[in-house]
Length: 507
Image (tube, rainbow, N blue to C red):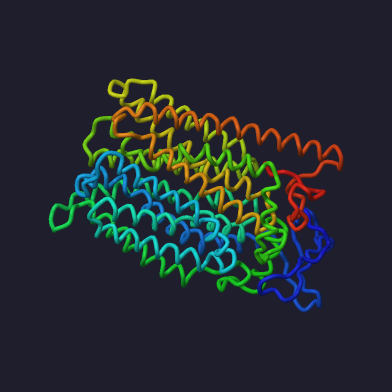
């Protein structure tokens, strides 16, 4: 990576400007960058070893905490499917489509409040807003224990949707303030794998909890007590533990803070820790690619939510008991996490995004088509393998698509605004998923499976179209200005996005 001989404007706790002086490198192979303040009072050498030490601290101090937080987020959102197999509908007296309505109502406040909470997170800091949201949705989960009817559960699902709405968008933005663009996919994948692990763990936890046959409560209620209380406890720890940004992280030395700041200025943000300006941030929607990204998010949302909400019901068609059905959801979810990590690490290694997003959509399409086309009762092993492909194709696109467009937005305000709309939009498709899986279509759910496959197929085509356009546009820019590698352009020059003279797409 090359650095221009210019000042990196200070922000946050940095009172003096830092200079990345390429002329002081001993050699290109040495990879050393000298960082110094304007008055020459301090000098820091950013060698590859020093940079790796900073990244390693981020990996150990931030990623595990965020992963556990997202694990609880996923558990509290998706445990309704497990509870249904243990008699939730019978206990609460749900009739007709009331269960589907309960699932659907979650996504309305999820979309409506996400942009506002995302902006609040940018203003107050994700390190404060994320744990607060976590505590609130943990309380909503515990309160499900006291629900006695359809109305009570409907109200709690509404507030749960509000509390969880901006969680994933804020985590994505938070990680972009610590990691370079080429480091982000595998880190976000490790974090997101917590969702797949949560889905697997929820099956195991439900298997254990549903063995409780004593006490005055229905066995499924204990599931909400355990998950909700653990969520609240961990949110208190996270509020105390998470740093506001790399420049004020207490676990970094002053020299390491300088290195972390320089990393973000040259390969993530145009202005580090920039104050949020709503009018300026709205400029992201002047770019046609933003609208195509939203279209791909819609296509992603239906398969993603179908698998998250209805995998127990899909596997239930194999003919096993409620306890075994929950147990059989573990392996597909674990394999989904593994496939996510494989594709994300490969994406970072190759510095390519769209081929792996497209591959995920293809897995989804094939998995659902197989499940619709075969006789499940006679081909149990093929059907079970198809459920693996469903999980392969939902986890990877969700992560890599978000990394893809974040890699192309150096403006921090525009980045958080688009993410706070795109991610909830994908989750809004849960309204579609929860209404196409109708009880009248059980156990085959052919209309739902075919619809989900169609969304996956369209997402595959849109992803290839956007990737091809980015490649073509880069070649057009190279023809006018000379060939440039996206890695050689400091992000401090890319505040205006595609309007910037030296902009190149990270595809």
